[in-house]
Length: 229
Image 1 (spheres, rainbow, N blue to C red):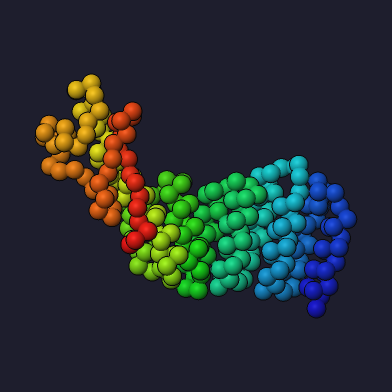
Image 2: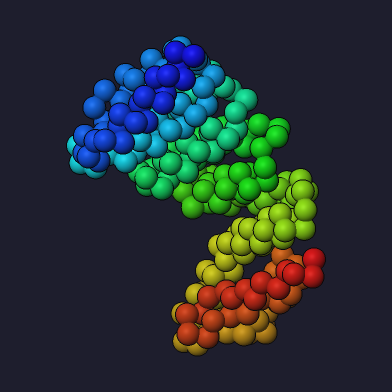
Protein backbone atom coordinates (compact mmCIF):
# COMPACT_ATOMS: atom_id res chain seq x y z
CA UNK A 1 0.00 0.00 0.00
CA UNK A 2 2.82 2.40 0.85
CA UNK A 3 4.47 1.61 -2.49
CA UNK A 4 1.20 2.35 -4.32
CA UNK A 5 0.77 5.67 -2.53
CA UNK A 6 4.32 6.76 -3.29
CA UNK A 7 4.00 5.60 -6.91
CA UNK A 8 0.84 7.65 -7.52
CA UNK A 9 2.35 10.62 -5.72
CA UNK A 10 5.52 10.41 -7.82
CA UNK A 11 3.62 10.53 -11.10
CA UNK A 12 1.69 13.62 -9.99
CA UNK A 13 4.76 15.24 -8.45
CA UNK A 14 7.07 14.88 -11.44
CA UNK A 15 4.37 15.86 -13.94
CA UNK A 16 4.60 19.41 -12.53
CA UNK A 17 8.31 19.75 -13.28
CA UNK A 18 9.94 21.05 -16.41
CA UNK A 19 11.79 18.35 -18.39
CA UNK A 20 15.22 19.52 -17.20
CA UNK A 21 14.08 19.28 -13.53
CA UNK A 22 12.38 15.88 -13.57
CA UNK A 23 15.48 14.00 -12.55
CA UNK A 24 15.53 15.68 -9.13
CA UNK A 25 15.39 12.96 -6.43
CA UNK A 26 13.87 10.61 -9.00
CA UNK A 27 16.17 7.63 -8.58
CA UNK A 28 15.86 7.89 -4.79
CA UNK A 29 12.05 7.90 -4.97
CA UNK A 30 11.79 4.90 -7.28
CA UNK A 31 14.37 2.99 -5.31
CA UNK A 32 12.23 3.56 -2.22
CA UNK A 33 9.07 2.41 -4.01
CA UNK A 34 10.75 -0.74 -5.30
CA UNK A 35 12.34 -1.44 -1.92
CA UNK A 36 8.84 -1.43 -0.46
CA UNK A 37 7.54 -3.64 -3.27
CA UNK A 38 10.41 -5.27 -5.19
CA UNK A 39 8.03 -6.84 -7.73
CA UNK A 40 6.31 -3.58 -8.69
CA UNK A 41 6.74 -3.77 -12.49
CA UNK A 42 5.13 -0.41 -13.28
CA UNK A 43 7.45 1.38 -10.87
CA UNK A 44 10.50 0.19 -12.78
CA UNK A 45 8.96 0.91 -16.17
CA UNK A 46 7.42 4.32 -15.42
CA UNK A 47 10.37 5.42 -13.29
CA UNK A 48 12.69 4.77 -16.24
CA UNK A 49 10.35 6.59 -18.63
CA UNK A 50 10.24 9.68 -16.43
CA UNK A 51 14.03 9.65 -16.15
CA UNK A 52 14.32 9.44 -19.93
CA UNK A 53 12.20 12.58 -20.35
CA UNK A 54 14.93 14.68 -18.78
CA UNK A 55 16.65 17.11 -21.12
CA UNK A 56 20.08 18.55 -20.50
CA UNK A 57 22.43 17.45 -17.76
CA UNK A 58 24.84 14.54 -17.84
CA UNK A 59 23.50 12.06 -20.40
CA UNK A 60 25.91 9.34 -19.35
CA UNK A 61 24.90 9.54 -15.70
CA UNK A 62 21.24 9.62 -16.73
CA UNK A 63 21.70 6.45 -18.76
CA UNK A 64 23.48 4.79 -15.86
CA UNK A 65 20.60 5.65 -13.54
CA UNK A 66 18.07 4.21 -16.00
CA UNK A 67 20.11 1.04 -16.28
CA UNK A 68 20.43 0.75 -12.50
CA UNK A 69 16.65 0.86 -12.17
CA UNK A 70 16.11 -1.71 -14.91
CA UNK A 71 18.84 -3.94 -13.47
CA UNK A 72 17.18 -3.80 -10.08
CA UNK A 73 13.88 -4.76 -11.67
CA UNK A 74 15.42 -7.71 -13.48
CA UNK A 75 17.10 -8.93 -10.31
CA UNK A 76 13.75 -8.88 -8.54
CA UNK A 77 11.76 -10.10 -11.55
CA UNK A 78 14.14 -12.46 -13.36
CA UNK A 79 11.32 -14.09 -15.34
CA UNK A 80 9.89 -10.85 -16.69
CA UNK A 81 11.07 -10.85 -20.31
CA UNK A 82 8.82 -7.84 -21.01
CA UNK A 83 10.82 -5.64 -18.65
CA UNK A 84 14.05 -6.73 -20.34
CA UNK A 85 12.56 -5.95 -23.76
CA UNK A 86 11.49 -2.50 -22.52
CA UNK A 87 15.03 -1.86 -21.31
CA UNK A 88 16.41 -2.89 -24.69
CA UNK A 89 14.18 -0.53 -26.64
CA UNK A 90 14.71 2.34 -24.19
CA UNK A 91 18.48 2.03 -24.45
CA UNK A 92 18.21 1.87 -28.24
CA UNK A 93 15.66 4.63 -28.83
CA UNK A 94 16.51 7.14 -26.08
CA UNK A 95 20.27 6.77 -25.76
CA UNK A 96 21.23 5.17 -29.09
CA UNK A 97 23.16 2.64 -27.03
CA UNK A 98 23.07 -0.37 -29.31
CA UNK A 99 25.46 -2.41 -27.17
CA UNK A 100 23.31 -1.87 -24.09
CA UNK A 101 20.16 -2.59 -26.07
CA UNK A 102 21.60 -5.89 -27.29
CA UNK A 103 22.51 -6.82 -23.70
CA UNK A 104 18.89 -6.50 -22.52
CA UNK A 105 17.46 -8.06 -25.69
CA UNK A 106 19.59 -11.14 -25.10
CA UNK A 107 18.31 -11.37 -21.52
CA UNK A 108 14.73 -11.22 -22.82
CA UNK A 109 15.35 -13.76 -25.60
CA UNK A 110 16.55 -16.42 -23.16
CA UNK A 111 13.17 -16.67 -21.49
CA UNK A 112 11.23 -19.69 -22.85
CA UNK A 113 8.04 -17.63 -23.19
CA UNK A 114 9.68 -14.73 -25.02
CA UNK A 115 8.01 -14.07 -28.39
CA UNK A 116 9.79 -14.73 -31.67
CA UNK A 117 10.22 -11.01 -32.40
CA UNK A 118 12.74 -10.71 -29.56
CA UNK A 119 14.89 -13.53 -30.90
CA UNK A 120 14.81 -11.91 -34.34
CA UNK A 121 15.73 -8.57 -32.75
CA UNK A 122 18.77 -10.15 -31.10
CA UNK A 123 19.94 -11.61 -34.41
CA UNK A 124 19.42 -8.35 -36.30
CA UNK A 125 21.30 -6.31 -33.70
CA UNK A 126 24.15 -8.82 -33.56
CA UNK A 127 24.43 -8.57 -37.35
CA UNK A 128 24.45 -4.77 -37.25
CA UNK A 129 26.97 -4.56 -34.43
CA UNK A 130 29.30 -7.12 -36.00
CA UNK A 131 29.70 -8.90 -32.67
CA UNK A 132 29.87 -12.32 -34.29
CA UNK A 133 31.22 -13.95 -37.43
CA UNK A 134 29.24 -14.58 -40.59
CA UNK A 135 29.29 -18.29 -39.74
CA UNK A 136 27.79 -17.51 -36.32
CA UNK A 137 25.07 -15.48 -38.03
CA UNK A 138 24.27 -18.30 -40.45
CA UNK A 139 24.07 -20.83 -37.64
CA UNK A 140 21.82 -18.55 -35.57
CA UNK A 141 19.37 -17.86 -38.41
CA UNK A 142 19.25 -21.53 -39.43
CA UNK A 143 18.19 -22.40 -35.90
CA UNK A 144 15.71 -19.52 -35.91
CA UNK A 145 14.10 -20.88 -39.09
CA UNK A 146 13.73 -24.29 -37.45
CA UNK A 147 12.19 -22.72 -34.33
CA UNK A 148 9.85 -20.38 -36.21
CA UNK A 149 6.36 -20.23 -34.72
CA UNK A 150 4.43 -19.27 -37.87
CA UNK A 151 4.86 -18.50 -41.58
CA UNK A 152 5.59 -14.82 -40.96
CA UNK A 153 8.32 -15.59 -38.46
CA UNK A 154 9.79 -18.27 -40.70
CA UNK A 155 9.90 -15.95 -43.72
CA UNK A 156 11.56 -13.20 -41.69
CA UNK A 157 14.21 -15.62 -40.45
CA UNK A 158 14.70 -17.06 -43.93
CA UNK A 159 15.31 -13.55 -45.22
CA UNK A 160 17.99 -12.97 -42.61
CA UNK A 161 19.53 -16.38 -43.31
CA UNK A 162 19.62 -15.56 -47.02
CA UNK A 163 21.43 -12.29 -46.28
CA UNK A 164 23.98 -14.02 -44.06
CA UNK A 165 24.73 -16.70 -46.68
CA UNK A 166 25.01 -13.98 -49.35
CA UNK A 167 27.51 -12.09 -47.19
CA UNK A 168 29.65 -15.23 -46.87
CA UNK A 169 29.44 -15.86 -50.63
CA UNK A 170 30.50 -12.29 -51.34
CA UNK A 171 33.56 -12.74 -49.16
CA UNK A 172 34.56 -15.66 -51.37
CA UNK A 173 33.47 -14.49 -54.82
CA UNK A 174 34.09 -10.72 -54.87
CA UNK A 175 37.90 -11.18 -54.71
CA UNK A 176 37.70 -13.56 -57.68
CA UNK A 177 35.69 -11.03 -59.67
CA UNK A 178 38.14 -8.27 -58.74
CA UNK A 179 41.14 -10.39 -59.73
CA UNK A 180 39.56 -11.23 -63.09
CA UNK A 181 38.67 -7.59 -63.76
CA UNK A 182 42.20 -6.45 -62.91
CA UNK A 183 43.71 -9.06 -65.21
CA UNK A 184 41.38 -8.64 -68.20
CA UNK A 185 40.38 -4.99 -67.74
CA UNK A 186 36.74 -6.05 -68.03
CA UNK A 187 33.98 -7.41 -65.82
CA UNK A 188 33.37 -11.10 -66.38
CA UNK A 189 30.34 -13.25 -66.74
CA UNK A 190 30.50 -16.58 -64.92
CA UNK A 191 31.62 -18.30 -68.11
CA UNK A 192 34.73 -16.14 -68.21
CA UNK A 193 35.69 -17.08 -64.65
CA UNK A 194 35.09 -20.77 -65.39
CA UNK A 195 37.26 -20.62 -68.53
CA UNK A 196 39.95 -18.83 -66.54
CA UNK A 197 39.94 -21.68 -64.02
CA UNK A 198 38.74 -19.48 -61.14
CA UNK A 199 35.46 -21.38 -60.72
CA UNK A 200 34.18 -24.85 -61.54
CA UNK A 201 30.61 -23.72 -62.15
CA UNK A 202 28.31 -20.71 -61.91
CA UNK A 203 27.55 -20.07 -58.23
CA UNK A 204 24.04 -20.37 -56.85
CA UNK A 205 22.45 -18.51 -53.97
CA UNK A 206 21.00 -20.01 -50.78
CA UNK A 207 17.79 -21.14 -52.51
CA UNK A 208 19.42 -22.44 -55.69
CA UNK A 209 19.00 -19.42 -57.98
CA UNK A 210 22.02 -18.17 -59.97
CA UNK A 211 23.85 -15.13 -58.69
CA UNK A 212 24.36 -12.16 -60.96
CA UNK A 213 27.30 -9.79 -61.41
CA UNK A 214 27.12 -6.00 -61.18
CA UNK A 215 28.67 -4.89 -64.51
CA UNK A 216 29.78 -1.54 -63.11
CA UNK A 217 31.36 -2.64 -59.82
CA UNK A 218 32.20 -6.25 -60.74
CA UNK A 219 30.67 -7.49 -57.49
CA UNK A 220 28.23 -10.25 -56.65
CA UNK A 221 24.49 -9.57 -57.03
CA UNK A 222 21.69 -11.55 -55.38
CA UNK A 223 18.07 -11.49 -56.53
CA UNK A 224 16.65 -12.88 -53.28
CA UNK A 225 13.59 -14.83 -54.37
CA UNK A 226 12.63 -16.81 -51.29
CA UNK A 227 8.86 -16.41 -51.04
CA UNK A 228 8.13 -19.88 -52.39
CA UNK A 229 10.23 -21.72 -49.81
